[in-house]
Image (tube, rainbow, N blue to C red; front, top):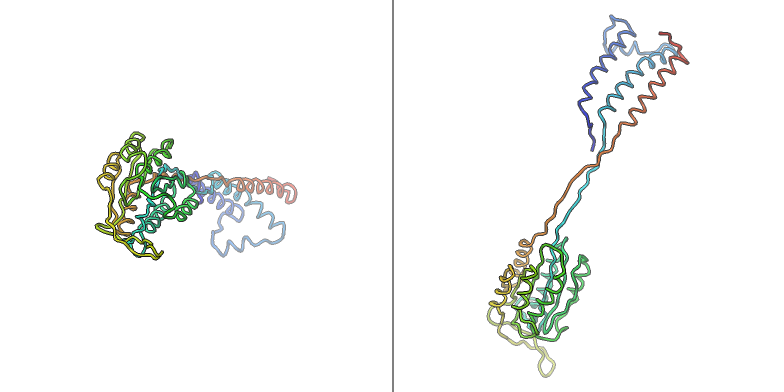
Length: 329
């Protein structure tokens, strides 16, 4: 970028050009018209001294023009942006119990669809700290709050079913997430809990854990995942062959709704993969990270070369007149 800090100074340029015209008239005669053809003829030097004389005569004028430009303070600038973010701390709790093998989210099971949708959510949250908890019969913190999204994504991708003792410890998952968020200094703290079952394990019940979350200002968004009615779950029979068994879909929606509303969050039901994507998009829009962008420009003065050149021209004028041409006033 380029600018003159004091552009009004450039209004002095017509005065400088007028002085130039007066000098020209003085040098070539009062009756000389300022025509292009005569101008070129008059400027044509007869010998080297005549050339130096003509050059010397206009050096102060050129120096004056340069000084006017310098007084206008020419500057070049470089623009910068400074981002100030107010991130949100989020703990993701993903059910890894055996019922997540259900194939009602074809062509993949509930767990694989939930993982992929969770990963897509993580990629969108560039400025937040996010942690990850896997739970079944108990809860394990797979990743504490972090801004290292690559590491977090790898941990989520590597999480498998049947890696934790079976069961559905919803209360333990919430309590573990609350413990990870209790020392957080973020203005907004969120737990996203995804499950397809009913709390049947753990020493802490979901409502007690939710009450603690409420006291610490932590919101819980819970998602019940699974179709209505029955769902097929792959099982191995006595001969080691995989068969499919239809089991009823049991989600304690009343409990999850109460847990969420108690903390200022919401409960959602995902009956297919598209609905699950929509739910994560809704949560993403509800919990917006505040980003303040400040734009500023750093300007650097460029008048020094102009002043230096003007000084050199004036010194050259003096030197030519006094040492070579020996012009007498």
